[in-house]
Amino acid sequence: MEINEAQLSGGFTGRSLVLFEEGGAESGLQAVQEAIGLEVFTASGEEAAPADGGGVLFETLGVAVVDAPPEQVMQAGVSAAGAGAILAVEPERIVYALEATYAPPANGHVRLPEVMGPPMPAAETPPAAGGRSADYLRGYREAVLHLTDAAGVEAAAVAEAIAAAVDEIQATWGLQASKVANCCRTGAGIRVAVLDTGFDEQHPDFAGRTITTRSFIAGEAAQDGHGHGTHCIGTALGAKCPGVRPRYGIAYEAEIYAGKVLSNAGSGSDTGILAGIEWAVQNKCAVISMSLGAATRPGQKYSQVYERVARRAQEKGTLIIAAAGNESRRPGLINPVGHPANCPSIMAVAALDVQGAVARFSNRGLNPDGGQVDIAGPGVDVHSSWPMPTRYRRISGTSMATPHVSGIAALYAEADPAARGAALGRLLTAGAQRLELPSTDVGAGMVQAP
Amino acid sequence: MDVTVLIADDHLDAIDSVAAALQSAGLRLGEVLAATGVVTGSVADATAMQTLSAVEGVAAVEPAQEVFIPPPDAPVQ
Image (spheres, one colour):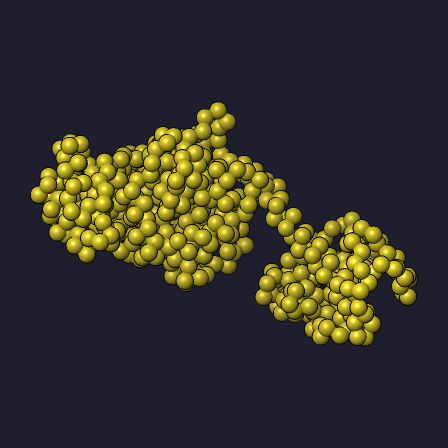
C-alpha cells in the first residue's frame, strides 16, 4: 500500500480510492468497514456517488470509494485482518465530464487539467439517466487507470525494491526479492528432488521433515560430505522458522528427495545424473533441481539424450530446473549456458544480486536452439543451511539461484494441481518479475512466488 | 568410456530387449532407466559408440560428460 504524499494537497475530494487484490474486495472492504465504522454499498450503476459517511464498491473493478481520508483508510488497512487484500489507497481526484464545452460544476470544485484526457465529442457523452452517473463513472475509470498504472510503476521499479530489501533479520534478501516471504503457499503435498552432493539429515532445521535420500555415487552414502547439496536443499525446502533467523527456505512443507549425484569431492557424471532423474520421475517428484553442469563452447549443441529425457519427464509431470553455470567473468568474459541447462526442455536459471543486477559469473544465452536463459533467481550472497556443525553459510552461484526457482515451482505446483511439467514452467516464466536487462542474461526475469 | 544411450520413443516398451541388443553390440551395461528411456554403460572406444548407434531402437548415443562443482570453501559454487 502506498500514499502519494504530493497528492494530499489540493484537487481532491477528501475521499479515498481503495484498490483491492483480485477476489479480495469482500474481505478487504470488510476490514475497512470494521476499522473505520463506515457502511459501504455496492454500486448499482444508477447512483454511484458515495453517500455521506459511507462508500461505494465497484465490484467488477475491485475498487471502492470510501468517505474517509487516505491516511485513515491506510491505518485501518494496516491493522485489519483483511489488509492483505488492499493493494493501494489513493485520494479521490476531482474529475469532470470530458465535454467539449465546460460548465463550472455546481459544487464549486475547480477543473484539474492534469487529470483530463483529450476532450471527447459531446455526442459520445450522452447524459445518463439521473444526471451525473455516466460522467461520474467515467471519472472513476480514469482514476482506476491511474491507480493500476501506479501499481505497474511499482512493479517496474523492482530493482530499487530489491536493493531496499537488504534487511535480513526475518528473511533472506532472496526470499524477499522473490516475494516468498509474503506467500502463503508451503509446498505441502509436493515432492521436490534436489540432485546434488546429498544432504545432512542431522541438520536441526530439518527435524521432523519427510526426507528420502539415495546415493548414485559408488562407495559414498547420501550424507553430504561437501555442503553444496545441503545449501541448495536449504533454499528450496528449508524451514519456515529455522533454529536461527533469518528464514532462508521456500517450500517448507514439501517432501524432500535428496539424490546424491555429485561426490563429496564435487564431481559427477551424466550416468549418475540420469539415474537420479529416473529416480525422481519414478517417485513422482513435480520438480527436479539440478545445481550442476559442465561448461559448453559457443556453437555447441545441446544433448539429445537430456532433451528427450526432460520432455519425457515433463510428460510424466516432472519439471527439470538447472543452473545456467558460473563460467562468466563479466564484463570481460561471458560464456554460454552450460550442459544440461542448455536443453530446450530444461529451465536454465541465471543469478541476480541484491541490486537486481546480473551476477558477474552468470552465463548468458549465447547458443541458439535451446541455449537460452529461461529465468533468474537470487544467486549472490545467499544464506542457507550447511552441514553441521557449521550449520549456515553464505555463498554465491547460479547453483544458489536454481533452488530459489525450484522451491517456488513447488509453491506453484501446490497452488494448481493441474500445473505440472511444461505447464509448471510456463507459470514460472509468466509470473517472473520483468527486469530492465537483456533476456539473454535473465530470461523472463526475477522468479516470483505465486 | 562411459556412454548414455537414448531409446527411441517407439521402442520404449521394448527397452529391455534394446538393452540386450546393445550388450550384444559391445555395451558393458550399467543401468536401464525405463521411465525416461535411457540405457547407460560403457564401451571400449568411439568406434564402439558408432556400433551402438546402429542398434535398432536407439535414437542417440552420447559420451557421458563429467560435471564438477568447486570445493566447499569456494565463494562461488
